[in-house]
Image (cartoon, rainbow, N blue to C red; front, side, top):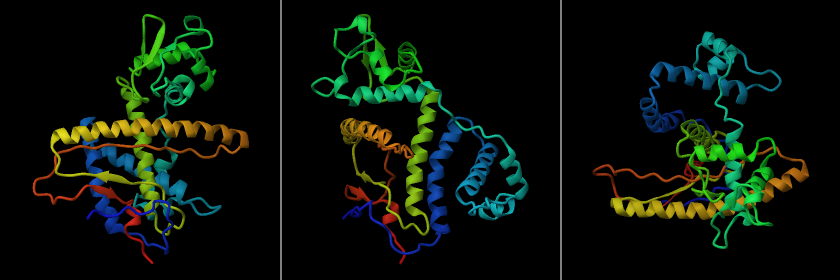
Amino acid sequence: MPPRPENPDSTPSGAGLPEPALAAQALSQLLRPLARLMIDHGVQLPAMLELLKSALVDEAQEAYALDHKGSSDTRIALLTGVHRKDVRRLRDAPHLAQEPSNMLPLAASVVARWISDPRFLNTDQSPRLLARTPGRGTAGEPDFTALVAEISRDLGARSVLDELVRLGVVERRDDGMVALRVSGFVPQDGRGESFYFLTANLADHLSTSVHNLKPGQTGPLMLEQSAFAQGLSADQAGQLHALARRLWAKTLQQFLQTAAVAEQRSAASGDESHRVRFGVYFYDTQQEQGAPAIEAGPVPAPAARKVKK
């Protein structure tokens, strides 16, 4: 029988201790797809080592500082294993964080509103065709210019439309209408934008797992579960992929509708201190020969499998 999912909102008991051997074993697997990313895009080992050192120093400095004292170079070196001279050099170096253009989050928000707000949806919940401007549409009907204005007045609707067309997310039609080509913000030709979302999505997903496995964790665990199936034909795997996309489209719309209301209520209360990310993924690969067959079923969050008392 497959393992039973445990309540992701449960609170683990016990202090919990570091598990360096288990963490190293997990890292050895997590590094494989990172190695593919490095090889595919020409990032070699020296550059990766510098990135790892910088990440270790940043986390030790920001997340493990002593109250009212910060962290000395010596303490960071002891926590991370990075040499003190490298710690000092990296602390003084300017940070080159990946920042999205002002257009990117705005464009994503426009698409999110388009696929979730009933005013911009057909009766079957599909995104409506929108007139580019009020003058090109029917009086009283929503249009693309009004949609953008609801999100922000800092950038013009024409600029946002041009960017969405460039990314292959929307289609500008000859009859003056604009059509959404995808059921979410999925850039077709924006390589930089795709790398930005890879960073944001995977960093938050991994942060959830790290939070759940933190030694001494006493608060509620964050939701982090998946379902699996093995022994499939390529055709059956493809059908499951199509099903996953349909389920996600429905869930995404419901979540965005609720999130829009939550944002309005938070703004009204004056407490806008948190952000959330809710995502999904699907992975299909050839099964290793001789791998034991496992009945399809859910996989619990890693932190819920073993709790020290």
